[in-house]
Image 1 (cartoon, one colour):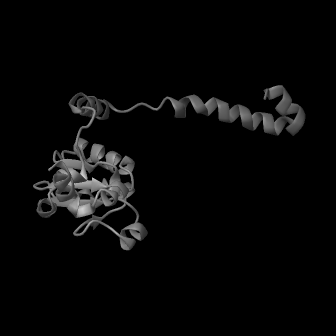
Image 2 (image 1 turned 60 degrees about the vertical axis):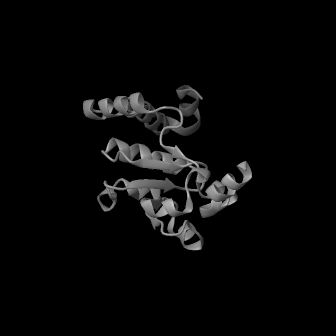
Image 3 (image 1 turned 180 degrees about the horizontal axis):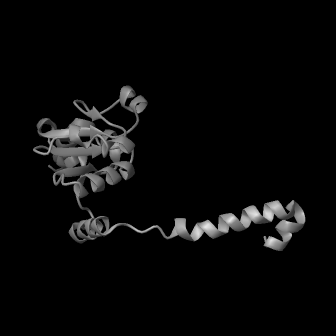
Length: 160
């Protein structure tokens, strides 16, 4: 749509409003990270590899769940219906703001439904100095499908 068309259809006021929006867009679209944030992102991506920090249910023996701080980042309703035994719940959008509640001396095993939100949480926490953050590969759905807490035993039995 051209501004001329807008002026014809909606009058001069609409055209002026449209021009105002277009005048502001470059400032919004070109927002810059500050130097510290840029350096933190560069450092994070230099450290990361393809499977950085992911762990599959089959890799976790049942007794090892006690060694993790298991963090369910799904919403409270999903957590209330079902979750990994012993897990704590902080919705993914709130984890960074509530990071002081999380231990730094224990590995955090973060999960959501598929792994996408927990990946965002892990990245933010690592950038904030939490080095021992792992993402449950495939999230809760895959964990459950693979056998849950017994996924490791099940996978070990299948290999024999």
